[in-house]
Image (cartoon, rainbow, N blue to C red; front, side, top):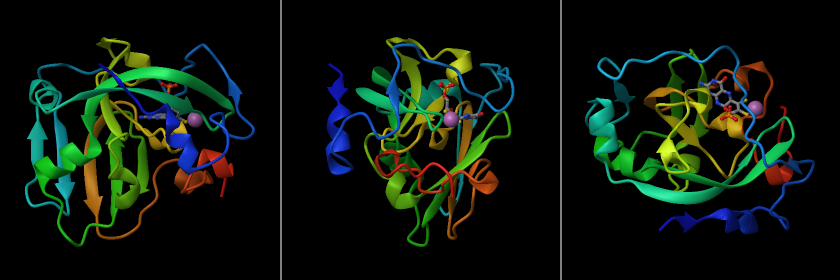
Length: 197
Ligand SMILES: Nc1nc2c(c(=O)[nH]1)N[C@H]1C(S)=C(S)[C@@H](COP(=O)(O)O)O[C@H]1N2
Ligand SMILES: [Mo]
């Protein structure tokens, strides 16, 4: 059974639909450049930085980690929201536990195959609904939506969720990601309309 986490808006705002958003039933694709290709044999997921053990996982090893399925909402900073997305993957806390995060870690940088990066505080990542997703609606995650593996962040605008994620770096200092360096809000709370900084 999928866990429904679409009520998380209650800790951020009055309405499930954040201000200034409109609901869509489509699932548009938004990428800074094209869809990168990947090869199942050579693909590796890496964890490094402020951790006890650096990790290098094959796709099979990644999908062998304890997984969960959740129903989540998805909010794009350009103004559309999609309700009730079914995502299956590994939660951020599960991955963090596998690597063993050290006490001096405060921030996280996600790295992607297309050169994209995005950052969040460690605290904002340590939620069960921050998922490394490899299935959408019970099927392998489509390549244009970030397959084989992407992050979703239902408490943030969707640019905080790296598609084609290939690595996670635990940081002892605050650093900015791709869009955050180019004027997008670093905090990105949809219910406060934190779109641009
Ligand atoms: N690697 C990577 N991740 C990315 C992006 C990107 O260009 N590259 N775009 C971001 C933006 S701005 C949004 S709104 C969502 C879009 O996800 P979707 O294409 O599945 O709708 O992915 C985010 N993650
Ligand atoms: Mo976006």
